[in-house]
Image 1 (spheres, rainbow, N blue to C red):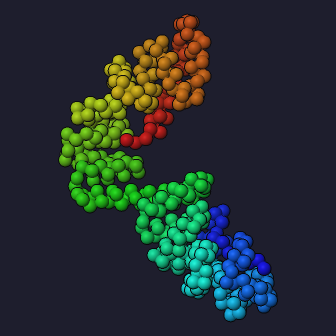
Image 2 (cartoon, one colour; image 1 turned 90 degrees about the horizontal axis):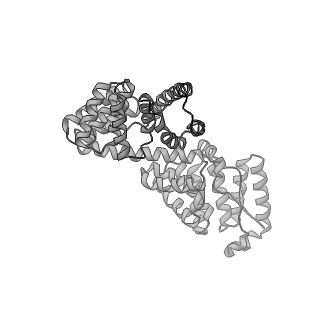
Image 3 (cartoon, helix red, strand yellow; image 1 turned 60 degrees about the vertical axis):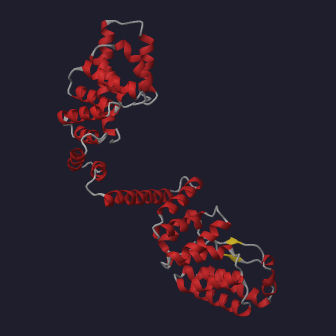
Length: 393
């Protein structure tokens, strides 16, 4: 006869499994009991065949108590019939009777230590019972036997999170994400694990010296990420007071001022940063950007932006500002190169680039004025959008 063993939950149903703390109702067909030589005589017993049919019928009709009773009767007749322990343990698990599920599955694994499905179910039972330390061993054993069991590995990752072993949990979730790249739950869990790892690392920095430059910068970065730039200013100022000559301290403070459109203070901090770190192309670019925002000295702004791009040629955020400076200086002939760069990032610019190439031979005054107005309006919109979308540094 052929026995059905409950499998670990299907990934598609996994969210429901977690919410309901029960296994999915679907089952997978395992090999004939001929694979278990010592149990073969029991499997052929007519009484077992009849009891198994009754257990299946009871389960399908929703009579879980009746199904459990049938499997208990099977084990009284054939105490070494491993699949019966597996299915009985699964029924207990569906009924949230975790102690009974654990005891039954452990007994089944004593009878057949290589019964993979029982190992998975035992780990799940321990996990749902809140015995996270005990859940780890059977789940890890199951993964060693079948490294591609997504459900078992996801339960193992969740168990490791409960044990606060975030590093190993992240490793398992990364493997799951490779196999199930469209599973939102996996990505959500992985993101939360990374947050935990980050919080642990940052907490250690703060624990070592809460008044250090790094501790104040971390607090400032957290506030900046929440758009609380006023609060970030307080922490960044403390970092500058502690280490005024350390690279990065003036830039972070200047960037907070820049986000608040406090151009004078931002300029002073970016200039101080360039004294400490002449190669900081972000500070150099933002000096030019500030001048453009105030509609001041486009020649000087262009020099700042060009120096930034010479140091960091792939600083794409600076190129729209360079184009804006060229427009304000009426240097239209140099804009083609800017358009070529931007067309790689902004598809809408490709139309302007094509139009520019077609008409470079004709420079009528009316055409230039029309183009200038069109480009200036477009750049102003893009500059506003770019500033809004620029990652906070």
